[in-house]
Amino acid sequence: MASETQAGQDGAAALPLPPMKWDAWGDPALAKPLPEDVKGLLAAALGVSAVAAAALLAAEDVRLRPSALAAEDVTALAAVVGAAHLSTADADRLPRAGGKSTPDLLRRRSREPQDAPDAVLLPGSEEEIAAVLAVCAERRIAVVPFGGGTSVVGGLDPVRGSFGAVVSLDLRRLDALHALDEVSGEAVLGAGLTGPRAEELLAERGWELGHYPQSFRYATVGGFAATRSSGQDSAGHGRFDEMVRGLRVVTPAGVLDLGRAPASAAGPDLRELFLGSEGVFGVITRVRVRIHPLPAAKVHEAWSFPDFATGAAALRAVEQQGTGPTVIRLSDEAETAVNLAMTEKIGGTQVTGGCLAVTVFEGAKEQAEARHERTRAVMLAAGGTSLGAEPAVGWEHGRFSAPYLRDALLDSGALCETLETATDWANLDRLRTAVTAALQAGLGANGLVLCHISHVYPTGASLYFTVVGAQQGDPIAQWDAAKRAACDAIMANGGTITHHHAVGADHRPWMEQEIGPLGVKILRAVKDAVDPVGILNPGKLIP
Ligand SMILES: Cc1cc2nc3c(=O)[nH]c(=O)nc-3n(C[C@H](O)[C@H](O)[C@H](O)COP(=O)(O)OP(=O)(O)OC[C@H]3O[C@@H](n4cnc5c(N)ncnc54)[C@H](O)[C@@H]3O)c2cc1C
Image (cartoon, rainbow, N blue to C red; front, side, top):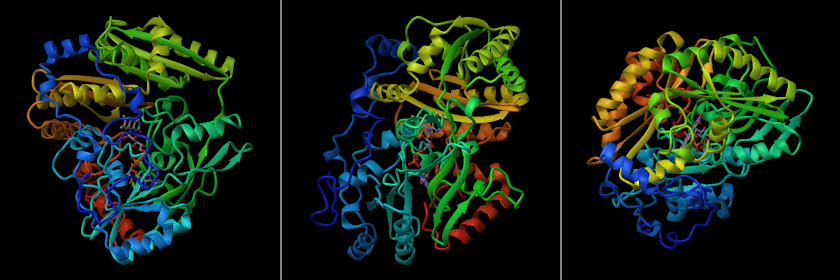
């Protein structure tokens, strides 16, 4: 890596690196190239050509903009976290340069100078975080809280805003299980715990949180809370924000400890202000969550529906009758046809025609079986045909692998990205049709638009779109145009700008339409109260 950073600060990483590769998803050992037959299919059906793909760069060839942190700022911050927990080395800045959206990954391939935080700090306690925020407010340095680094909405963009420099506040050292209350079924988790580590610590005592987003292996507890994340088991365990009983948040104006009782009538619930606050109002340091005993049994069943509308009606009936699946999801015809729900079978023989649905049930053995039987009856009555357990087991087996597939697609010259929204059941078809049409128009005739439902509520559901097309010209601009068209279609057709990916920088232009000008004014007023200098995560969430 070449930059004109302060002398001696270039070179080897001084801090522990994030576990993910800096320019791709996850563990490089698990990355797989696309099989030749899938490449052939992509070339024939979508005109995808590997020639279009910008090559990956070696880390040494990346040029970062130089660190703008003054020597006195480095000294002041090192006095708080310790010199061993601060770095301005490019090798530490590069892996915190952004999140893992497709534009993020494509930007990492650029030979032009890339944006990166001016320094990385690893605080070890709430006191250190409070002191870092005080130094940054006084010295006018912006701060981007960094959890697992899996944002797909530009939530980690190293924006300096009106400040002279920006630092990444990597929260990985807040990784303790602080308390486990087996009587109430609650645990207090450090914000920097990754999903697997949190589950491991709970499992040692026989408990589970049950939050499994596709980014589970790398995302953190603080990140889940800061983005209102939703996991694949949301039908059984709820969204992450529904699991949160309490939060500790360090703001530049002081510390908040929110959530005193299982329920309260003491005015508006301030936890809600910090859930989904995306590092703009404060740094979440601890999260008190509802937990449940590790399930003793699991039952799987997959289903085929003749079309998406029939399948969606079945999911609605299951949710409205409360029959209790832990997982319930439905792929549309296009997603079913390419076997996207079962990553390891992509491009292979079709598992079913029509639309594939997956259900999983958990709990004590009798509970899981009873939930399965009740749900089964509703699915049959709604026109479903059982495919047995195997396709649902297959989905579960490959459920964290799809992001590796995206890397392989990008390398092969395909453009691949996702977006999501939610609406009421009565509006689901209208919204899906409008967003599909907008994405299709944005990608051109050869683009493939796939959709699934993966989160259901008594009154509505999420819609998750995956697009695959040929990279043409500047793929970042190509996706930007398609995404803008889709976001406009979402707003015009009664959807929310995001169901679980959050707002970040990418959805910020639509926030005023989402919550109205008075809503924006309220968020700005809260920002002024908790972060009067405005150092926290500039350019995100609030328009
Ligand atoms: C391949 C892939 C699949 C995904 N699948 C899902 C999914 O199934 N469900 C889902 O909900 N999301 C999903 N996401 C999105 C992402 O994983 C979530 O938004 C996740 O909750 C982010 O957690 P993180 O720890 O990685 O946070 P980061 O990406 O590090 O940060 C996200 C935002 O929160 C802020 N932040 C992080 N930690 C804190 C903290 N402690 N205090 C204050 N602010 C903080 C950051 O500043 C940033 O604005 C996916 C992303 C990818 C790349």
